[in-house]
Image (cartoon, rainbow, N blue to C red; front, top):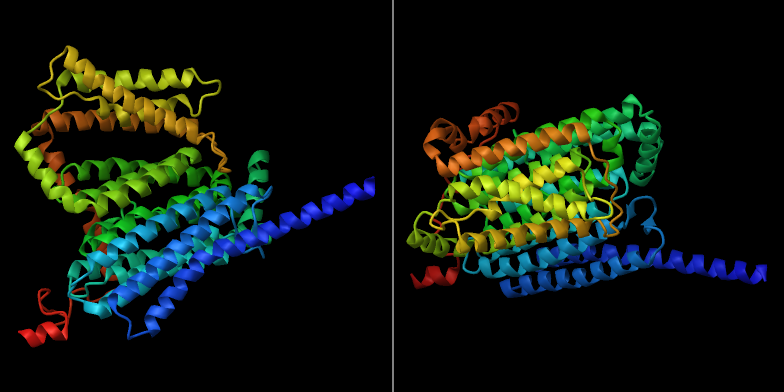
Length: 548
């Protein structure tokens, strides 16, 4: 009997190992298909534009199917599938791989239509498709990375391929300047990542991220984290700050609006979120260093507050969205510093979906602006701006109190109440009565829905462990309350913040300082040469030239 049971156990182990190996192979199909599409496009110079885009879209949709299959195999495996200590599939990485691949397929389809008749012609579209495939393949490898070498190489490859998309229009000075500033930030981040990897590798004796997480968790539980481990966490945080467009190195993400709109969608919905993914993936290492956690909270909170104020002074839709991304990245990094990794994960997924839709549908902003202009200014009623946070706090706290085990600390309830209170603002023309009750009821339903969604996210088996930081949490709650007061004053009595609004519109002149420093450390020519300056309305094909 024991022999039979032992044989069955061996068979189950073999099937489990086989399923893990198949899962890894299937997951790697997505980046491999993207790279094959890029190679085919690069070497097949006779292909038409429609053929180029059909190849890329076909590869991405097949990659999406492979990502879904890999996620299914991961769910069936008792342990996260891994291969050679270099790549691994966790529940969260499998989920994000499906998300990234789906958004990539949509963005590629949009790009094919967006670039029809572009001044760059077929050569430009071929170059664009190759760079887009390279970015997506690198992002997928980064999500699967389970080794420092894979992590650093994949993140560097993302930046290198993205440079070609940012400089798609080589005659636009601000596009070149933004690409140069991002290149400088990437190289500094690479140095910091190598330093973090060297310290962690020396401490653990291996470059495996899984072994690092186990080692760090053990020492955090015993409160015996070494100086090398804490220094590695600080260097990792600094690298993420540089890669994630936080203040003061945020300027490049504002100026890349010169790139095609689908590039903005790709950047804001996928690439810039990678910093949050790395922090969540390395959460055990972050917990080993109080300095790293406070650094994340400080930089993230400052970025969220200042970028949020700047966003409210901007008129251009794409620039507002860019500043919104900076603020959201600061908020997400702050969540990681506070130890709320599940909420940071939910924030990452929601931000990716929202920004992809916002940029790809930005062409309808003109019509929306005209309709809003016809309706006139619609200020929030004074009674509602003060009542809304109280009602939001009561609603969120009540729903949490009804739970058997609250999903987050009390101070985060205060943060959410400040953030969601504007959803319950009533327009000024709505007086107290039945209409105001309807407005408040709709807002309360939205707040309740968001609270329920955030609560359900904690029940998902994503493999994320929270570690709330209470001391920093109450500081974040106070800062969000002050920001809410500033928002109310800016909406109701804008003249009282004229000087502050002027500084906000200038971005507090932070980017000017970084631009001068970047050009001093790494001088470059960011204005196009005379040969590159051409009329964007010039004919883009020999046939058009012949007709003229």
